[in-house]
Length: 171
Image (cartoon, rainbow, N blue to C red; front, side, top):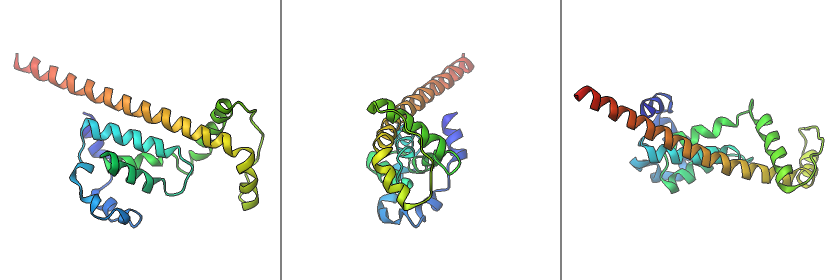
């Protein structure tokens, strides 16, 4: 069941291979193992994709693709999971990262109002930046591990359930 679900929702291989930002990986994209759907590659893809979804950097997809190539994770799924942080969800997720970061670092949360200016960004790096970065890292690691373990468990459970169904039909 998980394999069929992922096959339905995954983006087209050719679209990903022809993406202008992913051309830097060249022939590495032609490795067939990056496109297979199995328990290990999908679990790794969730770990990679969820980790980079929490990283507040531009080109998250390219970083996720590079890391997916290194660890032999499913490439399309790794890239797609980066879009958990999209323009609609990003403010809430990154604010939560900031709150977690303040808790981990042990500093009080500061009130701030976002401004789309270079001056605000420079000032914020020194005030809210450390807690924000720590929170992003902590939540990235936590959700990465949770994603890996959850998908691995669901996949194993699903396969075991199918085996038992087949055995029951044969009996």
